[in-house]
Length: 453
Image 1 (cartoon, rainbow, N blue to C red):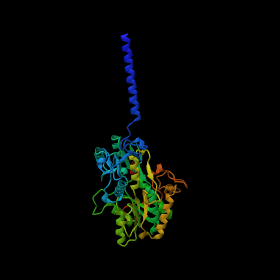
Image 2 (cartoon, one colour):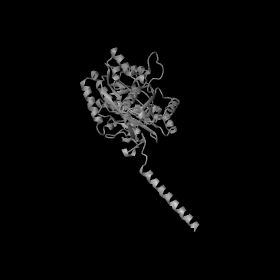
Image 3 (cartoon, helix red, strand yellow):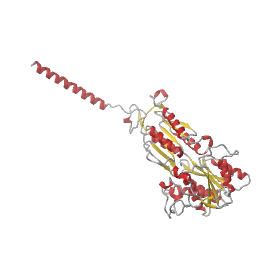
Image 4 (tube, rainbow, N blue to C red):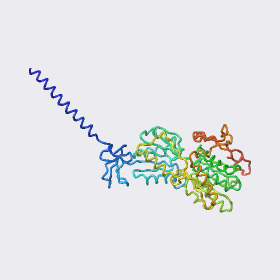
């Protein structure tokens, strides 16, 4: 009998322990700890001692000590975990042009996003330099790395594979991966307007274009410029001359950079309006100097909204970038767990010039009202639904490197635009570039373009 009682007592004790255990489990489930500051949420109920602020758990604060590490008290009065972004600039801000536009966009995003922290490295284009800087960024806790040039893409892809927990963006990169995205905008639309404006100003029916890096992007812009010019006047031709990189890397020859020398050669060849897509304003300044010397010539600015400041009496207008709104959107998506690297961003031009990533600003003081009005009318057409296809809608042919002409009503696909290594009809080059009196021939895109897709 004593043995039986012991067993019953053991069973009773086991049952009691099970009951207590089940009760304890019930308490844990009903009082689940919420998500911490910086975690993704759907409602206030998801967050522990915080509220859900646009899909991020955050709490109010007045001073830094109100916030638990690693969160900080932002200017919005919220404890948030900072989003640390590192920028790899292919050039330097002081050279104006392309790199300056990204620096301006970075500052705009910093003003718009209180939780954003940024770091910048300039003049980074060599593979070893890219790898070293990215390593340094990551060691400092950077969670997003932005490379502002297509030419940095391959090195950044290597870094993205090395750091799978870091997000990477490449401007005009044209490729995506699990933590690797690309962003850009349809600058061809702005160059289309630039060509249309230039054709209204030319007297010689001969325009010039100083090309930078030989890539499908640059070829696309030359073609759009040519198509816009021939929209106004089918007799216009565009002479192309190449620098070979986004800017002249070498010391000046005889005190002059190559952009300036190329601009002068195009003017000597009979071009009276010059466009370019270099990362600086040297072409515009060269044209301004020629006009001061008595030549009736004009230029088109590039990259910066105020690029015509370098050519106050000769610059017709400028194709420009404005990255602030796009950077703000992308970084906010990343911060809130809503960014999808598989989506290739390629924004079209917008009629809202304050938020559009690309645009064309007319210099009314040089163009006069009629050209300015026509440019704004064309902008409105490009900004309408379907307007993105307008610069490359047929009929038109190539100078020979495309297998067939673009049929009437046919639009060149986005896929082909990103690999465009053929010139549209109307792009020419001198048979002897050193002799401005030599015959024109249809220009052909150098083979280097095929390696840069």
